[in-house]
Image (cartoon, rainbow, N blue to C red; front, side, top):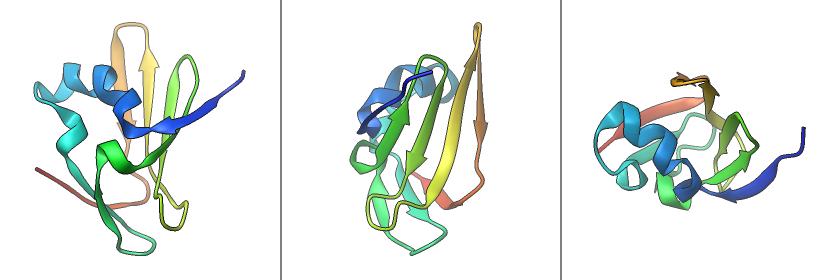
Length: 84
């Protein structure tokens, strides 16, 4: 499977179905380096079913969004916080 590296705006559609608001304005804080940024500013490795969200400063994996049919799953492995 081929993935493409894009910014966090690419996850808006997947996350909007869960969060019911504009997810690109959520602030994510890296559990690795502590950098805080909006979701729109992070780096995302994206393929047909998965988005791996990376810190733009240190490339630490913040979280993963997976699409499974109509369902969306999120794994928050390296995220220190997620806020509005």
